Length: 350
Image (tube, rainbow, N blue to C red):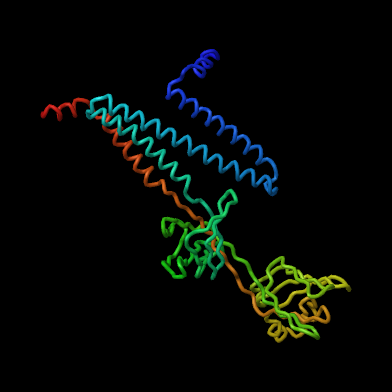
């Protein structure tokens, strides 16, 4: 279309259809421009709080624009169908055309309804519960119920790689357990319209350490990288935590900073058994001496494995509506392409 024609199109007393087309095109241009802005923002560091907020804002605006476009298309197609119903005589083929066009707004309505659904993630440690989920744009949401991870198991292949991980979940509402379910990969669990999928897991070793000196006893639960100040001048940082160090049992690596210098020591849970087997063990390996850093004595009580289950939380209220629209569309297509002589013969009674 020439520029003059476009100008006349926009400035003339346009019909309602022209106005709708103009609005839809304007929304589409806004949507494209917004996506370019999002692309430009993504080139910057997403660690910036302001950038994350802007990305979240534009992501929400994208959903709103898509919803408005889908709603307007639904209204346009519905108006077109009503016009056919009012001005045309209904027969087999026209019924197919009506169903064909009716299926489109129903599918679009399902898409629009899906924008008000849930697509989020949550990490729940074993033995704990949560009703807070985290959307991909950083927004948080509270569910009407809590999800508790009662148990979490990882099954391994012979080579040590995980073959399956299983979550034992309880759904709690109003302080009572409403449902218990076993969640596996590709076997989602549903509760009150919300679907949960097993998306991953994290396991972390934690060491229970007893620290004594001449005046007090301190118990700590430390994970890899944790840092603790025993007093103003002594700092402890946890290194590797190993459940079985060279068949000697659980062991923890500690980095200890003191005014006299820095020390690296290993503490073994089964140190006494090791010394019984090899009496000169501490002479050969002084770094395993629990009293290496005076006046402290370090004893490893135990090493525990703490696992969290990773869940994908999904809710799409538009799935049924979109599927219904697809079926209506398919029926309309079939009715349109049935050879004319077949339904004509049925009409004539042959």
